[in-house]
Length: 572
Image (cartoon, rainbow, N blue to C red):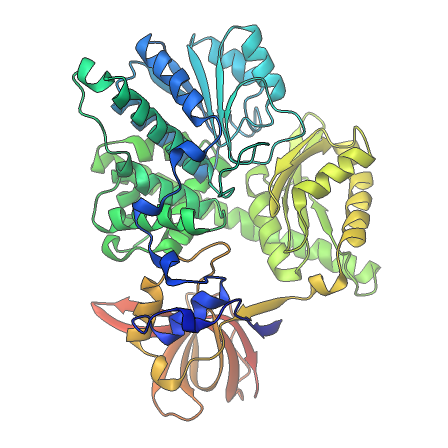
């Protein structure tokens, strides 16, 4: 692994003296060109009216409310889908909707999105309107079936569309002709914007007075927006940073759903100190575990309940599911390692530029995590497949910077008509379904197309750092400044530093984590560090080079600075 220092796109001198020089350097290296971008107040949120189709969609929704017709939400089985579904239900109920329900397709029975089969299930409820959240932009056949049955469909999504759009009302910043400046809204961000537009529409029509309802404050749902946005790993441009920052403020103040409070409690993360990484590493995996292994319904109900007691019971269930998911993932990793060892032997040490893996025992719900872990380890785009039943394989793909995964799959589908049964996704992550009999042909095609499209240099693993910190900057004060300087996340990464240290002591804790006592080369002051899933270093190791994050460690009421070690090189 190569450690490379980031270059600043802009000079740090464009910031005021009130901002710590280290933060100035970090912000400049992330492309922030002026201090105004640090203002994450709601006043700077992109206007609702900029989103194509949102006002027409709000009018459609208002008419449905006026007629008192049932509304059915069709969600997705990940954390973004769960938060989108919960937000839609909470908002519509607050607006006075009489009958709002939801369906989330079970990934093992129906797969993803608004399929004709899901429409048939929906039709039994006789909805006046179907709203998709975090899906629907590629559901042409499902929308067509709904139209045949006379059920209007409103698609809210953020995924990239195909060349043609479904015949429905659509709100999606990625659709053609939409000049919304941020294309990075998560599914929950899209439904939030729609509910804000509906709120404005209802106010103008005098709806709340007519129904004797108190107009809701749409900002009350920003806790869900922050949760879905962070867990879906969408780029944190300024607009998303505003949504996340405002949501985190509400969570820290205790103004959040009981389910979010409960999930933080089972994860042992203090509510008052929660940051984006707590959402990404503590709440997100627990919510996602339900959709991966069983049914995301328990996650949605956890977010919907008003009872803290019920929320804690559901959070405990989600925590247990996440433990099971980790066990399954560990076994799949071992199997994947054996496959890759055989590939090494067959190719005399040279792995293909793209890795396409399958084992008939792998779990459909966990192949996405497996692909992500292997991609991180081998610095290659990866597709991991599981048996989808009825002669098909279902794969989850993860890419590296510079290779657009959905475009790659589109290219394969164009070059080899019929090879892929279904695909969709983003630049960095996608899903694909194919006949089991087509696996070997797809594997060869995928490997070849990756080889054609990427530069070999892209396959070299590297860590981008923000340089070194001085000895006096390895402090609790600096750790707190960095923690408060976010929200950090996708495309606005948490600060990562590099440095050489003397190793004073090491010990393995929790079976697989390495606890370190370190000192900077010119200081006797000890600072502690921890490297997760890191075996012990050779006993004669005296010096190490680290890539690390500086964080606040709170234990038994005491706070101290701690290095979270991302990469370690023994210098002996």
